[in-house]
Structures are given as structure tokens and as C-alpha cells.
Picture (cartoon, rainbow, N blue to C red):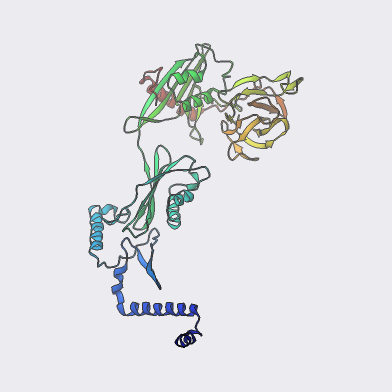
Length: 491
């Protein structure tokens, strides 16, 4: 009977209603405490600018604290910290204030954490193909909101979209007490050899800085005799590959490197090399002077930037530009495998007019635009495979066939500069192996690329010529002070 009465007393109540009622009662108790306990509750504020955002109490479950980290925008002042009553917290704040007093010039710009502020070792991450900076930071464990704030600050000194695959980024985290969430403290990486970029947490939010490295500059005067090829001789002389490629490009308007280079020919270069504080070479500057002696005849070119131009160019001693309207060989390190004219087609098996020249090279070898112009055709085109055609002026066009792929950003209507990489050697279309098929068209009709007469580039005159000749004298004076070496120290 007693059990029946007990059931009848609670028969009209839903268990869910009881739970809701419990929550209401708890909320009322919390409100009562907030009203009558007053500011003394500020002692619950956490160090490092964190504050109690909410208190949730669930029956049979321990109370849970959720902390919100304040975000400060540049130019705003952070809220004053709440008074502390805990002795450990008091010591931490004093340590923070002491640190700022020691270095007052950095107060307000450098994040100075309290003494209890610790963090894990920084993570060094490598940018993967297709990565964004946001994806990289969140993969490292950074909060998405803080990552966004850091990237926004970074945009003042660096475009995050310019991160390259393989680049290393160092990410550091820090936290206050053990129960506080970690914060994104800093992001650093080298944009280039000369420039490092840093984003760090300050008392006003995230700030971005750039650090420029200083190098010692030493002039390099080097040369060698050619036995097999220019590239081989330069490599044995210790000249970096990047400088050798620049040397080849300078003379590619005048020299057929596959046919005109003979044993006994010589070359000479003059450029600057940069060294770090430990005396290690880190990079080379652009070639200031280059000469090539072929069968007793010497070509000499000097680097000079005209006062009315945007780019530096190479000129002979009379002030005539090395540039021609078109390069004869728009590819480095390749061999001429098939000439212009009638030949037995290697695939079809019968004689057929070959309206271009073929350069044999490995798949992936860069192909350069033979001259300034606009891409008028790009895509697969029958037996040509992957194909690009460039219009240079009202007279000349050039075509490039059998590519494995196009360079990034190539499309119809894109303007390209002479020497710019437009694609890479391949074996697409009707072909027996990897090579570049190169055509020169005059008035929409193919002509022999190796025999077409090409107009010369700019000729300096008047005041510009005088400025150039003064520049040549300066380079000659510097070269005379540096003995020429035939073997450079390797990097």
C-alpha cells in the first residue's frame, strides 16, 4: 500500500520536467551569488588576460569553466587586468611588470608573458603542395580564430598566397597555467635569403615584422677554357649553375651553342657573391660583364639599366643591346636533332617537309619564349601535341610543340617576355621521343629559324650612351682590381 501511495504522488510528473526545474533552481542560485557577492568574484579571473565567460552546473557532474581569450585589434588598448588575490598570480603579474620596466622601449609592442607563461617547443612545418597558411597553422594545432588574426597581420608585410611548396615555417605556442588553453605565440619563416618574416603575439594583438639580413659582398672574376661544352667548363671552374644559365642566355641571341662552340674557346664572367656573417657564400648577384671567345673572335657584353627603362639589359662596348627580336635557341642544354627542310619522317616513314627545327632534351627541360609577345594559341593541336604559338609583332610568330606541360599562368592572350619559361619539353603528339619542335613564322608561313635575319635591339645614343660608357669604365676598374681565377671555391 505504501509503495502504491508513493507511485501515486509522482505519477503526474515527467522526469524531464524535474531536470528542467533543477537547472532553473541552479540558475537562480547563481544569480543570487552574482548580486550579493559583488566584485569580489573578480578573483576568479584567470591570468594572461583571460576571463570567466560562463559557469555551467549539471547534477552529478563537476562544474566546468569555459575561458574566452580576448582579441585585441591593432591600435586599441587591452582591458586592465582584474585584481588578483592569489599569491602565485600576484608574483606572476609583478614579474611581467618587471620585465616591461627593464625594456620600456618594447612595452606595448612585444608580448611579455608572466613568469608562469610556458609553452611546448616550436614546431617546424614544411609547406605541402596545395597548402594555405591557414591550413598549415590549424594542422599544427593553432586556434582558427587566432590563425586568422595572425594571417591578417601578416598581410601588411607579406602576401600569404606566395608561400611555396617545401618552404619551412616555424610555429610557436605558449600557455599560462596548466589548465589554460595554449595560444599561437609566433609564426616565422624566411621569405628569401635576405628577408625573414615574423608574426608574434603582443599585448595589442598580433603584429608582423620583417628582418633583413646583411651580407658581405665580394666581387668574383672567373673564366675558363672550353673543352667539351660551355656548361661543363663553367661547372668545373666552380661557377654556380644559375650563373652559367644566365651566361648562356646572354649569348643565346648570337651563338648556336651546339655548332659554334669549339675546344679551346674561352669565357669570362664578373659578378658579385654574397657571404653571411660566418663567411659562407649564400647567393650570387647578376653578371656585370661577360665575354665569349669563339675561334679567336671575342664578344663582350656589360649589364646596364637605361635611365628611361624598367629593366636592365646587356650591351656591347658600343652601346648596342644584345637582344634581338627573337632568340635562335629558346632552350638551354639541348642538342639540335633535326633541321629545317625535307626529311624522312621518323613516324610516318616517308619524305616530308620539316617546317621547323627539333631540339632533343629530357622531359621537363624548360622552354623559353623566343621574344616578347602575346600567346595567340595554346592547347593540344593534332600531331603537334601540347602547343603554344606567340605573336611577337606584325611580322613574326613562333611556335613550340610536343610539350609535356605548360608553365603556370600560360593562357591565350597572356603577354610574355623574352626568356620567360612558357612550358616544358615532352613527347605529346606524333613523336618518337622527348624533344622541342620549334618554328618561326613570317607572315603565317614557316621559315628556317636558323637562317632568318633578325633585327638588332636598341642602340644607346646621346646622354644615355655617355652614362653607359661611364658604367663600363667603372666595371673595368673593378675587374682590374680582382685577379681572374679559373677555379672558384665551391659553395
